[in-house]
Every structure is written in C-alpha cells, then in structure tokens.
Amino acid sequence: MYDWSEEQQAIIAVVRRFVDEEIRPHLDDLEHNGVPPYEILRKMYVTFGLREMAQENFARQLKRKISGEDATRENRSSDPAAQLISTIELCRVSPGLLTSLGVSTGLAAGTINKLGTPAQMERWSLDLMTLDKIGAWAITEPDSGSDALGGMRTSAKRDGDEYVINGQKTWITNGPYADTIVLYAKLDDGSGEEMRNRKVLTFVLDKGMPGLEQAKPMRKMGQHGSPTGEVFLSDVRVGRDRLLGESEATKGGGRQSAKDNFVAERAGVAAMSLGIIEECVKLSIDYAKHRRLWGTAIADFQLIQLKLAQMEVARINVRNMVFAHIERSAAGAVPTLAEASAMKLYAAQAACQVADDAIQIFGGNGYIAEYRVEQLSRDARVLRIYAGTDEMQVVAIAKDLVRD
Image (cartoon, rainbow, N blue to C red; front, side):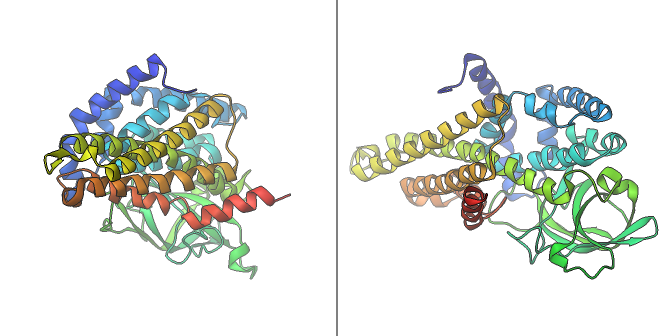
C-alpha cells in the first residue's frame, strides 16, 4: 500500500468536511472553555451512521462470545484503513477528541468484550460502543506510572461474596465524566504475598457508586479536548457480577488484558502522530509561502527550506509506517510488542519535532493560540508520555527482541 485508494480518499474528504464544519468552529470551547467533547463525538456518530454500525458490531461480538468464539475477532476483521482515517483526520484538528473516543469505545468497551461474560457485555459494552455512555479505563496510579502493573497499589479484598476496593487512580481519560469505569486492582486474599506479584483483577464500576469519587478535570499542558482526572476509591463494595468474567481465573487475566491494550494503543499513536504532522506541514508550507521578510517569502530562505524538508521526511516515514500497519492488520497480523513500541517511539518523537519546527517557522505567531501550531505542539507532547514513556518504549523493544 503506497497511497489511499479512491474509496478511501472519498472517506477522507467526507470526514474532513465534517471536521471543518462541526469541530473547528468549537475549538475555542474545547481548548479554553472546558466544554467536554462528547456531544461533538456523538454528532459524528450520528452523521456517519457509526452508532448503527456499533450496534451491529456488538451483536456479532455477542454472538461469538455466546458460541465460545473470540468476541474481539470482529474488530480484527473490520477495515483498519477506515478506522485509522478517522484517527488521522481528528488528530489534524484536536487529538484530544480521538483520545477520549478511543478510551471509551476502544479500551473500556474492548476490555469488557474481551474479558466479560455475555451478560456483562449486554449490561455495559453496547452503551459504550454507541457513545450512549462514556467509559474510562483506570489502570495508572500516582506512584506506578510506567510500572503500571507492578507498582499498582489499588486493592480488592474479598468479603463474603463481594469485594471491597480501595485505592487511587490518576491520569484517567474521561475520568471526570465517565458513566462506566473499567478498573484494575490487585487481589488482597490475605496470603501475605508481595503486592507486586499479586493477581490483577478487572472490575466495572458505575458513576455514583458509594465510595467512588471522580475528581474534576486536571489543568493540562495539552489535549484540552480530552478531560483527564483522578478517581478515588474508599471501601467501594462490588459483587462478583462486576468482576469481568465473574471469575478470578478469567482467561488472559487482568495483566494480559492490560498488555494487549498497550500494544493496540501504541500502534494507534502512529496514526495520531500522522494527523498532527500532516496538519503542521500543511500550515507551515502555506505560512512560509505567504509570510514575507525583506520583500521575500520566507519559503525562499534555505534554513526554512531545511525545516520544511525535514518535516516532509518525517511525514513520509510515519505515513509509510501507518500504511504498513494497515496492510498487516488487514491480513490479520498483530504487531509484536517491539513493533508497536517502535512505532510509537518514532512517530511520537517525529510529531513533537515537526510541531516544534512549525512554531519556529511561524516565529512569534507560532507562540500564540490564534495560530494553530501552538495547540498542535502542546497536544503532540503527551504522545511521548502516555501508553508508556519514550524510555519505557526502549525497554519494551529491547526486552521483546532478546527474550527467548
């Protein structure tokens, strides 16, 4: 695959028109006025028939689950290009929108579909997939960060037929507004086993449960279109019906579920990066051609040309990476941890560098909000942090390459 097909280009044009007409006019509200992104995302779902598609997808996954097949197989057989087109186009204007959407419909609903029983899927997943409800995926804690599983301290203690959950989660996308929270916790079975090695269980919580507090949105550097917050748990009591799979021995378990999600999330960052890069390149070329100094367009200055050339090299590299991922996904191939981490590491760094170069090209104008490269630079920076920092990607790549 070296370019989008005619059909895919038609999809791009339609999505881009929606972005221009329905999202760009609301950027100030998303960026500076604290307006949550969910109504815009729901309008997108209605406009493109995504709600009906989600319902059909859910029905197929539920049927597979009931018959004993892998309930996530349908996702792997769907068109990866169409999915990534929306990722790229949303990230050209507001990467935060994609982050909120992906966590709710992908991480939260996807985890329930993979680990949950048919009853649990019907209870929670359908509403998340259609955006009737908003989901959060709560794994990160204040003292765990990149050591999300090993450093986890949130605990679930058995109490008769129930569990009592205590702990704190942070950097939770959609956390302040989520209706449904997929939460990871360490089993406290009284065995005295070191906390680091305890079994990880996955629960589903609902807004308003006694002992569950969803803090207000954090004030972040970037991605203001994606509300992020802390979740506090104080003696939150849940029945076994809220334990995904309704068993402590669910196939794959909480640890494997989290690792699988990391692979998918890291590969997706490449498409997010491409959206940011493409928009920065477009804006920078247009600005360089029209901004004049000493009677000359700055596009004629060699140092500006060098930056534009390096930005284009990054765009081509990341685009080729995304295209290769699309082809492999269409063939049913899942990236290894090393491959997904390598994609994220390179693409996130490229997006940050391109956005920074765009600000240099714009000069003082690049430092103010009226010129969009300022926002894109802030939004790009977190790509080198979430889903694992650059440093953790290096570790993941090396360990996966040398393991037996």
